[in-house]
Image (cartoon, rainbow, N blue to C red):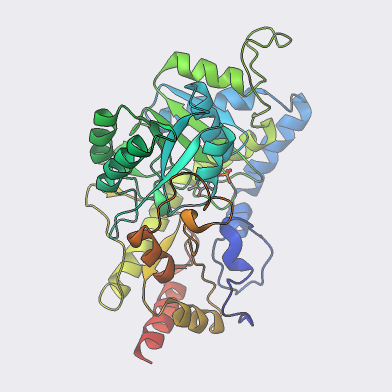
Length: 399
Ligand SMILES: *Cc1c(COP(=O)(O)O)cnc(C)c1O
């Protein structure tokens, strides 16, 4: 059960990108897709059978059904399902003609997909620091970086892509103020936060465009890749539907704009429809686990802050410690899988560090990358196991 590679994340710990549903019965899982599958098996099987029977594997009736259910949940006029979270971000940019010559501001503390989507659209990602307490995009640093880009002149400030990191919504009101001043379009990267809300207003309704992901280990995941884009603007949603199908509209043999194959398939939609039936219950269980962790750990460790009006979807539960690597080792030795999202800030990644205007240093982000450690988080982690995890962590701190 214990990992022999304490310095690297265990196999289970890399699950945010590479989930595995095979594990021993009493193994502590970083994310538990197997128990969820056991609970939903009859419903998932019936949904899959229905797709296999009707045979419309692409653009089947499940897509419209899922888009309607997601739009309702997100309190948003339009939900457009696409092939992945990365495609969701890319298509959102393409739909507003954001591309070559445009600067898109992204936090440096995120998964590389955020920057890659900008590059796929042909635009230039510009890295911004994050708030050390909430871990989301720092609006004051955004304003500074807009000025830097104006001064350096390598691209035109055009959009900002705040990330709801670990499931906690970004500070949209403050970002909106800076964006309005600088004339930036906001595209929310909500890949980790579907199911979260601010004062009861759900993710999907917090920004003019919101992209999310159904990668298996996200709070709502399918059994492969999938994504969705939300907006209240019907014409924008029309463009997204066209772009995801090679820029066609009614006539599938006439391209009216540049596009791609960016569709979600019917089987993934069927699986998501089954999983939606449990989603609220799972969000409650994640919240309860986060509260248990908070109550055990808040005196012992530094925890990211969470504004009272926000409810996270708890894609990741993170703690912060200068002794991160030693704690990870102790947990892994005790059979507790951990991960270090994110160890490498985007502005230091080999693929991105030579882009124009990359800052020498983004101090809050760099400090976080050295201190952040994430603990097992899923709806099926029982209280006794959660206490065991906290016991191991607290004992390691005392050493
Ligand atoms: C997972 C993720 C994405 C990309 O989603 P995919 O569905 O894997 O393409 C984008 N941004 C963030 C912050 C993510 O965590």
